[in-house]
Image 1: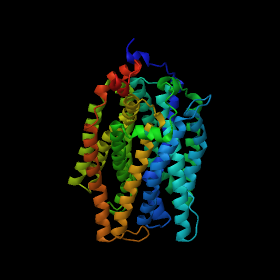
Image 2: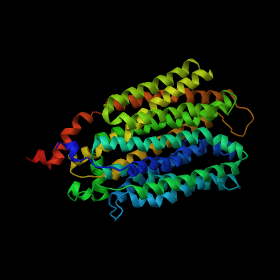
Image 3: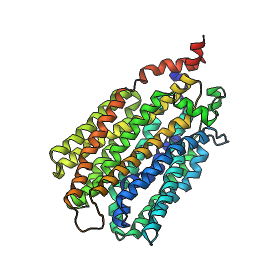
Image 4: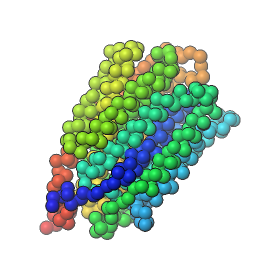
Length: 460
């Protein structure tokens, strides 16, 4: 029996469906925060984009602490339902609460509104989304250690993410307009998303099973202290590479979706075009997700991700040559979407591989802390980009409540939409090319199966 067969686990259709619904239930909160929340705060509530960007940047600093803390808490959880599932059950309610809180900004002074935004955003992002995402992305590593099965499970999760992403980014503005195009309309729409998210996450918790016993796999070193786990994480170069890839990838995603709305309204002259641009960008990810579910277990992950990132870069560059041509913008968005879907479709499976490397390197197994890099990267990437967008728009004199914008403000919108994704994608491609864990993985798993680690071999 080879290593792959040894770690293979029979996974039922219902369990696979539970992983798909984990993406459907967990992602809407992030999609709303990254795609529409800044626009809602500036153009519906009337807050300054620079101040909003600063609030979100402060939240990112807090996120750096919360991901590590909650990752360690989840790693130490031991219940009859497993490690991750109890947290997923809890988050079925908490995610719904977070979605509604973000958009129920009360009427009152600017100070009151900003205080409410600061409190609710931090509760939603720093606490609730951190717990939910860490539990959801860690769950497949507690179901199986087989890399092919993990790739399949993460592809299913990302397919669910894609469905949620396409639905929210494509139809939200239309739904809001249907219900009255005011704050009340936004609240009605997000309440619908909240109920659906809760139902999907509850199914994930109820239908999934955890087969990997972390204490048996790590020989008692899966419940180390936070300090020890953090120290071991800092020795894992592949964890840092994947964290960088996720931050940069989410940066491209966040810039594109946030700026679609502003670009359509102020450069193209029709805010309703943002829905078409969002669709062109997000729908291809469903197609890519389907391909990864079907064939992702059988391809070289690094080569596939490099090719996907190159496509994303091509789509970004095409916009430079025809920045106001709607056909070119749609075509470029499709290419960008295919590339983004390919990179993000493999990221969690590649991140999961760093768990095995970490155990081999240090002798300590920290599954949830390592997988927390996904949520941390999403929030840091999204937060930094939102802060940069808000800062630049504020410096150029943007006012979401004004009838028209200055030349400087329009120039800022153009630069953010066209140039920012190019810069981030180039950096992302560099990080991807530095990832070489795939060719070492079989040897690492063989050593672990024989009870060997890098430390034990050095002492021999």
